[in-house]
Image 1 (cartoon, rainbow, N blue to C red):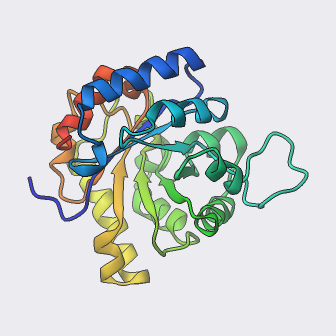
Image 2: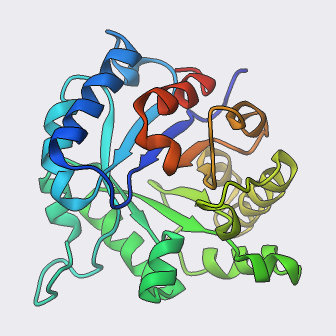
Amino acid sequence: MARARRPIAAGNWKMHLLRAEAEAYCRALADGLGAAPAGSRGPEVVLFPSFPLLPAVVAALAGTGVGAGAQDLHPEPSGAHTGDVSAAQILDAGARFVLAGHSERRRDHGESEELVAAKARAARAAGLVPVACVGETADERRRGETLEVLGRQLAPLPLEPPLVLAYEPVWAIGTGETATPAIAQEAHAHLRAALAERAGAELAAATRILYGGSVTPENAAELAAAPDVDGFLVGGASLDPQRFLAIIHVLGG
Protein backbone atom coordinates (compact mmCIF):
# COMPACT_ATOMS: atom_id res chain seq x y z
CA MET A 1 0.00 0.00 0.00
CA ALA A 2 1.36 3.40 -0.98
CA ARG A 3 1.65 5.72 2.02
CA ALA A 4 1.88 9.49 1.93
CA ARG A 5 3.63 9.46 5.31
CA ARG A 6 6.56 7.21 6.08
CA PRO A 7 5.44 4.87 8.87
CA ILE A 8 7.35 4.39 12.10
CA ALA A 9 7.92 1.12 13.94
CA ALA A 10 8.84 2.18 17.48
CA GLY A 11 9.80 -0.35 20.14
CA ASN A 12 9.33 0.82 23.74
CA TRP A 13 11.34 -1.51 25.97
CA LYS A 14 10.09 0.19 29.16
CA MET A 15 12.03 -1.10 32.21
CA HIS A 16 13.33 -4.28 30.58
CA LEU A 17 16.66 -5.77 29.43
CA LEU A 18 20.25 -5.46 30.60
CA ARG A 19 23.18 -4.29 28.47
CA ALA A 20 24.24 -7.69 27.11
CA GLU A 21 20.63 -8.54 26.27
CA ALA A 22 20.14 -5.18 24.57
CA GLU A 23 23.29 -5.60 22.47
CA ALA A 24 22.26 -9.11 21.41
CA TYR A 25 18.80 -7.79 20.53
CA CYS A 26 20.28 -5.06 18.32
CA ARG A 27 22.43 -7.61 16.48
CA ALA A 28 19.39 -9.81 15.85
CA LEU A 29 17.35 -6.84 14.68
CA ALA A 30 20.09 -5.68 12.30
CA ASP A 31 20.44 -9.19 10.89
CA GLY A 32 16.70 -9.41 10.34
CA LEU A 33 16.53 -6.08 8.58
CA GLY A 34 19.25 -7.11 6.15
CA ALA A 35 22.22 -5.30 4.73
CA ALA A 36 20.34 -2.25 3.41
CA PRO A 37 19.93 0.51 6.01
CA ALA A 38 16.40 0.70 7.33
CA GLY A 39 16.38 4.41 6.53
CA SER A 40 16.64 3.76 2.80
CA ARG A 41 13.25 2.07 2.37
CA GLY A 42 10.32 0.94 4.39
CA PRO A 43 9.35 2.22 7.83
CA GLU A 44 11.52 4.28 10.12
CA VAL A 45 12.57 1.99 12.97
CA VAL A 46 13.28 3.40 16.44
CA LEU A 47 14.09 1.68 19.75
CA PHE A 48 13.30 3.31 23.10
CA PRO A 49 15.47 1.65 25.78
CA SER A 50 15.72 2.79 29.40
CA PHE A 51 18.26 5.55 30.09
CA PRO A 52 21.23 3.36 31.21
CA LEU A 53 21.00 1.36 27.99
CA LEU A 54 20.95 4.30 25.57
CA PRO A 55 24.73 4.57 24.85
CA ALA A 56 25.07 0.80 24.36
CA VAL A 57 22.03 0.68 22.08
CA VAL A 58 23.21 3.66 20.03
CA ALA A 59 26.61 2.01 19.59
CA ALA A 60 25.09 -1.34 18.67
CA LEU A 61 22.80 0.28 16.09
CA ALA A 62 25.53 2.31 14.38
CA GLY A 63 25.34 1.89 10.62
CA THR A 64 22.04 -0.03 10.70
CA GLY A 65 19.68 2.83 9.93
CA VAL A 66 17.74 2.13 13.14
CA GLY A 67 17.28 5.11 15.42
CA ALA A 68 17.22 5.40 19.20
CA GLY A 69 15.02 7.37 21.53
CA ALA A 70 14.60 8.04 25.24
CA GLN A 71 11.50 7.20 27.23
CA ASP A 72 11.16 10.56 29.01
CA LEU A 73 12.86 13.90 29.67
CA HIS A 74 12.75 16.85 32.05
CA PRO A 75 11.50 20.12 30.55
CA GLU A 76 14.36 22.18 32.03
CA PRO A 77 17.68 22.26 30.16
CA SER A 78 19.71 21.62 33.35
CA GLY A 79 19.56 22.12 37.08
CA ALA A 80 18.93 20.48 40.45
CA HIS A 81 16.56 17.74 39.30
CA THR A 82 17.85 14.53 40.82
CA GLY A 83 16.94 11.43 38.82
CA ASP A 84 15.85 13.37 35.73
CA VAL A 85 17.48 13.68 32.32
CA SER A 86 17.54 16.71 30.02
CA ALA A 87 16.91 16.85 26.29
CA ALA A 88 20.54 17.92 25.71
CA GLN A 89 21.81 14.87 27.61
CA ILE A 90 19.56 12.59 25.54
CA LEU A 91 20.82 14.15 22.33
CA ASP A 92 24.40 13.87 23.57
CA ALA A 93 23.85 10.14 24.18
CA GLY A 94 23.04 9.73 20.49
CA ALA A 95 19.24 9.57 20.56
CA ARG A 96 17.06 11.50 18.13
CA PHE A 97 13.60 10.80 19.55
CA VAL A 98 11.97 11.03 22.96
CA LEU A 99 8.61 9.97 24.35
CA ALA A 100 6.52 12.59 26.14
CA GLY A 101 3.44 11.78 28.18
CA HIS A 102 3.36 8.00 27.92
CA SER A 103 0.31 6.77 29.83
CA GLU A 104 2.52 5.03 32.39
CA ARG A 105 4.24 8.33 33.13
CA ARG A 106 0.86 10.02 33.48
CA ARG A 107 -0.37 7.22 35.76
CA ASP A 108 2.74 6.56 37.86
CA HIS A 109 4.02 10.14 38.12
CA GLY A 110 0.86 12.22 37.77
CA GLU A 111 2.05 14.05 34.67
CA SER A 112 -0.37 16.73 33.51
CA GLU A 113 -1.15 17.87 29.97
CA GLU A 114 0.81 21.05 30.64
CA LEU A 115 3.91 19.15 31.81
CA VAL A 116 3.77 16.86 28.79
CA ALA A 117 3.55 19.89 26.51
CA ALA A 118 6.54 21.48 28.27
CA LYS A 119 8.53 18.30 27.69
CA ALA A 120 7.60 18.28 24.00
CA ARG A 121 8.69 21.92 23.66
CA ALA A 122 12.00 21.17 25.38
CA ALA A 123 12.60 18.24 23.05
CA ARG A 124 11.97 20.37 19.96
CA ALA A 125 14.20 23.17 21.24
CA ALA A 126 17.08 20.73 21.68
CA GLY A 127 16.66 19.18 18.23
CA LEU A 128 14.89 15.98 19.29
CA VAL A 129 11.71 14.60 17.76
CA PRO A 130 9.03 14.40 20.46
CA VAL A 131 6.62 11.48 20.30
CA ALA A 132 3.69 12.85 22.29
CA CYS A 133 1.38 10.17 23.67
CA VAL A 134 -2.37 10.63 24.13
CA GLY A 135 -5.17 8.25 25.00
CA GLU A 136 -8.17 7.54 27.18
CA THR A 137 -8.66 5.21 30.14
CA ALA A 138 -11.24 2.42 30.24
CA ASP A 139 -13.56 4.53 32.42
CA GLU A 140 -13.29 7.50 30.08
CA ARG A 141 -14.10 5.28 27.11
CA ARG A 142 -17.12 3.77 28.88
CA ARG A 143 -18.40 7.28 29.57
CA GLY A 144 -18.06 8.19 25.89
CA GLU A 145 -15.32 10.76 26.59
CA THR A 146 -12.61 9.49 24.23
CA LEU A 147 -12.66 12.36 21.76
CA GLU A 148 -12.97 14.94 24.53
CA VAL A 149 -9.94 13.47 26.31
CA LEU A 150 -7.89 13.43 23.11
CA GLY A 151 -8.77 17.05 22.44
CA ARG A 152 -7.79 18.07 25.98
CA GLN A 153 -4.45 16.25 25.77
CA LEU A 154 -3.68 17.66 22.32
CA ALA A 155 -4.59 21.26 23.16
CA PRO A 156 -1.39 22.43 24.91
CA LEU A 157 1.07 20.55 22.68
CA PRO A 158 3.38 22.57 20.40
CA LEU A 159 1.97 21.84 16.97
CA GLU A 160 5.00 22.47 14.83
CA PRO A 161 7.30 19.98 13.14
CA PRO A 162 8.98 17.83 14.13
CA LEU A 163 6.15 16.17 16.02
CA VAL A 164 4.90 12.60 16.14
CA LEU A 165 1.70 11.64 17.96
CA ALA A 166 0.98 8.25 19.47
CA TYR A 167 -2.59 7.24 20.26
CA GLU A 168 -2.40 4.68 23.04
CA PRO A 169 -5.76 3.75 24.56
CA VAL A 170 -4.79 3.09 28.17
CA TRP A 171 -7.23 0.20 28.42
CA ALA A 172 -5.30 -1.64 25.68
CA ILE A 173 -1.74 -1.23 27.01
CA GLY A 174 -0.33 -4.49 28.28
CA THR A 175 -3.78 -6.00 28.64
CA GLY A 176 -3.92 -8.04 25.45
CA GLU A 177 -7.05 -6.08 24.53
CA THR A 178 -6.41 -4.20 21.30
CA ALA A 179 -8.47 -1.43 19.74
CA THR A 180 -10.21 -2.57 16.60
CA PRO A 181 -9.06 -0.95 13.35
CA ALA A 182 -12.30 1.06 13.39
CA ILE A 183 -11.64 2.36 16.92
CA ALA A 184 -8.05 3.24 16.04
CA GLN A 185 -9.08 4.96 12.82
CA GLU A 186 -11.76 7.01 14.58
CA ALA A 187 -9.25 8.31 17.13
CA HIS A 188 -6.51 8.96 14.56
CA ALA A 189 -8.89 10.74 12.20
CA HIS A 190 -10.13 12.90 15.06
CA LEU A 191 -6.57 13.83 15.99
CA ARG A 192 -5.72 14.66 12.38
CA ALA A 193 -8.84 16.81 12.03
CA ALA A 194 -7.94 18.64 15.24
CA LEU A 195 -4.44 19.22 13.92
CA ALA A 196 -5.85 20.65 10.70
CA GLU A 197 -8.18 22.96 12.59
CA ARG A 198 -5.45 24.27 14.88
CA ALA A 199 -2.33 24.19 12.71
CA GLY A 200 -3.46 23.86 9.11
CA ALA A 201 -4.06 21.09 6.61
CA GLU A 202 -0.42 20.83 5.54
CA LEU A 203 0.87 20.02 9.01
CA ALA A 204 -2.05 17.66 9.66
CA ALA A 205 -1.35 15.73 6.48
CA ALA A 206 2.36 15.45 7.28
CA THR A 207 2.13 14.50 10.97
CA ARG A 208 2.60 10.82 11.69
CA ILE A 209 0.18 9.33 14.21
CA LEU A 210 1.15 5.97 15.67
CA TYR A 211 -1.10 3.41 17.35
CA GLY A 212 0.06 1.83 20.61
CA GLY A 213 -1.76 -0.75 22.67
CA SER A 214 -1.06 -4.51 22.60
CA VAL A 215 0.20 -4.45 19.00
CA THR A 216 1.35 -7.90 17.87
CA PRO A 217 2.40 -9.52 14.58
CA GLU A 218 -1.05 -11.08 14.52
CA ASN A 219 -3.06 -7.83 14.59
CA ALA A 220 -0.59 -5.39 13.00
CA ALA A 221 -1.74 -5.80 9.39
CA GLU A 222 -5.38 -5.01 10.18
CA LEU A 223 -4.42 -1.96 12.20
CA ALA A 224 -1.93 -0.74 9.60
CA ALA A 225 -4.63 -0.82 6.94
CA ALA A 226 -6.45 2.07 8.64
CA PRO A 227 -5.66 5.15 6.52
CA ASP A 228 -4.67 7.40 9.43
CA VAL A 229 -2.51 4.84 11.26
CA ASP A 230 1.11 5.69 10.42
CA GLY A 231 2.85 2.92 12.32
CA PHE A 232 3.07 1.59 15.85
CA LEU A 233 4.44 2.26 19.31
CA VAL A 234 5.01 -1.33 20.40
CA GLY A 235 5.48 -2.44 24.00
CA GLY A 236 5.61 -6.11 24.94
CA ALA A 237 6.00 -7.46 21.41
CA SER A 238 9.06 -5.26 20.86
CA LEU A 239 11.02 -7.18 23.52
CA ASP A 240 11.38 -10.11 21.12
CA PRO A 241 13.39 -9.03 18.05
CA GLN A 242 11.71 -11.62 15.83
CA ARG A 243 8.21 -10.48 16.78
CA PHE A 244 9.22 -6.85 16.36
CA LEU A 245 10.70 -7.67 12.94
CA ALA A 246 7.39 -9.24 11.92
CA ILE A 247 5.62 -5.98 12.82
CA ILE A 248 8.23 -3.96 10.92
CA HIS A 249 7.68 -6.11 7.85
CA VAL A 250 3.93 -5.47 8.03
CA LEU A 251 4.75 -1.78 7.61
CA GLY A 252 6.84 -2.52 4.53
CA GLY A 253 10.25 -3.10 6.05
